Amino acid sequence: MNIGKITSLKALLAKPFARQIQKRVNKWASNPLATQQKVFEKLISSATSTVFGQDHDFISINSYEDFVKRVPIRDYEALRPYVDRVVQGEENVLWKGKPIYFAKTSGTTSGSKYIPITKESMPSHTEAARNAILMYVAETGNTSFVNGKMIFLQGSPILEEKNGIKLGRLSGIVAHYVPKYLQKNRMPSWETNCIEDWETKVEAIVDETINEDMSIISGIPSWVQMYFERLQQRTNKKIGDIFKNFNLFIFGGVNYEPYRAKFENLIGRKVDSIELYPASEGFFAFQDKQNKKGMLLQLNSGIFYEFVKAEKFFDDNPKRITLKDVELGVNYVMIISTNAGLWAYNIGDTVQFTSLKPYRVIVSGRIKHYISAFGEHVIAKEVEQAIQEATNNDSSVLVSEFTVAPQINPSEGLPYHEWFIEFENEIENLDMLAKHIDNSLQNQNSYYKDLIQGKVLQPLKITPVKKGGFKGYMKLVGKLGGQNKMPRLSNDRKIADTLHNSNFVI
Image 1 (spheres, rainbow, N blue to C red):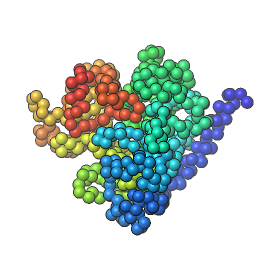
Image 2 (image 1 turned 90 degrees about the horizontal axis):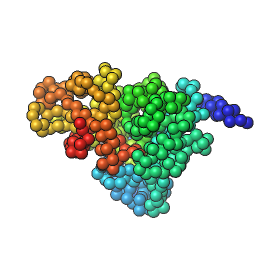
Image 3 (image 1 turned 90 degrees about the vertical axis):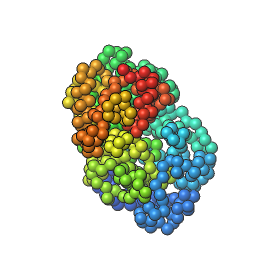
Image 4 (image 1 turned 180 degrees about the horizontal axis):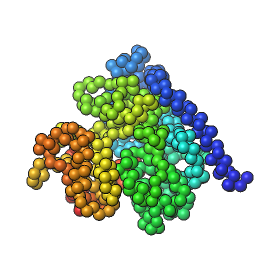
């Protein structure tokens, strides 16, 4: 059989497989509460004899209400005494047996975090990404990308070992689970993927892919953007002309919308996209429909979800609710219990529901990443929507990256929000752009509007960042590349002062 027949056969087989997966997903998505109840019961019964289960009297938990009484919400620091025992090699602490991996992440307060991944939880990290692509195939009928090359910009797959348990970045761990039928099409090479220095790695990826037929490109938008820019610098061509069959962009980690105009300019045309919501703690959601806002919450993946209204989260004993009581458009802190042994665990993300039939979410920000220096509680979703609306209003404005911080003690006038924006092009009227952004923010956030109208704050000001300034900042703080992302919001001036003091601003 020749190569052409083999590749067309692969595309042909993708469609019935996609329909099969679509049926499976629709089955649990249309029975959400029963699905979550089964997950809850299985989690409790599986961990009854663990150290954590015994400490929290799992054997007497017969309802969700019992669980709430016995298991408080914890973040990594609060769960750390148990995690440390697991890291030291002890068995049956948070989950039965030992984890098969630790996903190592850098915490802002905890130093390195070691997030356990068990043999029960590992499949959810790999199957959800596969299912996202297959749901896209089932919806659109598009299988043309199956025959091209695929690139996944990710961390190094080199794993260390700690007390007999392998550890590394989540994306590096997942690289060991690429199915055989994708390995021939997958790029970059293993050797290139192992390069630790991000700038060196991007150059090597460009070398390997520049003459290939790339059809799927996947990664965090800010780092894919860097890859696209290097390709364009090398060839002086649009990405869509370099890769004529590139027609699917898969992304996660940050909201794509602030990058969309810049990407379409780099590519030279529109391409379909699929949004994913993966984290070291679990794979929580993926975009299941091209024309629907939000991502389908993964209810059948060994993860039990709870939610707390973000505005009440720091109250004493805030009310916890399950899926049946969530409302559309409310900002919730998402709390998870998983078959990796995380219990009532606060991952730090806030979400909003865009649909309740089925349950779809968008990531609205981080519970610690907001601005409320004056009681405004501005969140990431609001600043991202504001900049998106402003750039939609003026299509000549192309934003590469941005972050926002409060300016509490200006040299003159009222305090304000300082927006640090790196533009792709020269902007003629910054004041007009700032006005559009500010108006959008006031329309979304009544607290912010009251502070502006009450003359407590003056409208926001834009500080332009030099080209490559944010890349320089991330390099300076040791977070260039991989899964690291530029925080959208700060409640202090740490990032702002570094940008100013390191001459990254214009």
